[in-house]
Image 1 (spheres, helix red, strand yellow):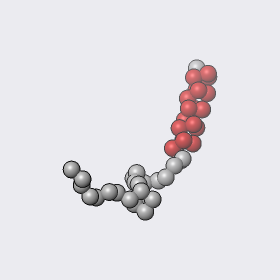
Image 2 (image 1 turned 120 degrees about the vertical axis):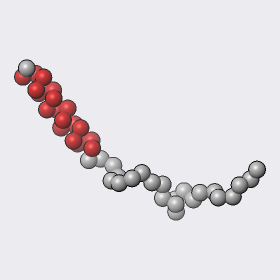
Image 3 (image 1 turned 180 degrees about the vertical axis):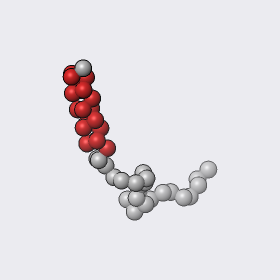
Image 4 (image 1 turned 135 degrees about the vertical axis):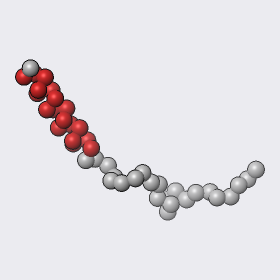
Length: 42
């Protein structure tokens, strides 16, 4: 039981640490860096 509790604790710590990484908010692509081609060439 003690071993399972330790594994659960470390798993929770790792999940909390990883959830703090990255950009917050919705995913986006900055238009200035990657402009979209709006012309259609059919």
